[in-house]
Length: 325
Image: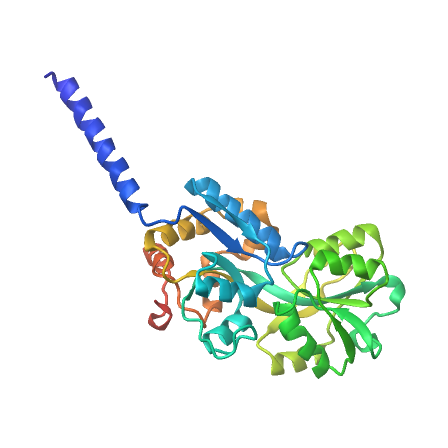
């Protein structure tokens, strides 16, 4: 056998070993996966569906986003293994870990692990310009307010927030696109959104009609922050055509989640793909500019999946011991 032939044989043998190892690493991977998002017309649906497609394409798997009731339901679906991945906010996550989820009271959801930070969810209010409502205090008693899907972050936290601010209302639920249509048709008076910005339904509304995007006063913001797990936020003026100045709001952080029992290598590859390709994430939704490892600190509730921990530690990011699965 010539030296060249021997070298070629060795090279081919090495490549076959690598291919076999790669296949072995994937033996326990799921054949397909689903990402729990939220209703159409909201940022979760756009972000989650786009992220699912990116993972599927890059890893050569079958996967996609699924319309759900949002963060609370996603926690339950991931916990039970009905979906592999999902999106949630930290308020509902804290409730789920403590067994206080509105969907499953008393059930401590301990099979939910964090992957990476997404973005902050601002709580914002939209009305039609001709409604005469220009502030929270202008909302008339008995006004019909759409709070998104039942048990969503908005539906869980916005009603008690507004009650704290003295607003009396008629509560409505539905998908964001549906509520946007109802607002435009005069069937409801206000939509109270909790979604990443820009909210697709609001962007669509302001193209079709004149709207008011209502901000919190300093006093209202401070009162809500004192009573609820939210922080101060400012909606940049360039988020919507309607805004002339930044709008004061409050917000809650979002994280992607996974079943803690998913294979470590599978979750490692998902985390690596998501954290090393922010340009591709930005193509999905511009709120992904906050989907970077530097924002890990905003999860103090859920344990990180071992696959995610491995990527972070390989890249110089520390995970507190109490947040390691």
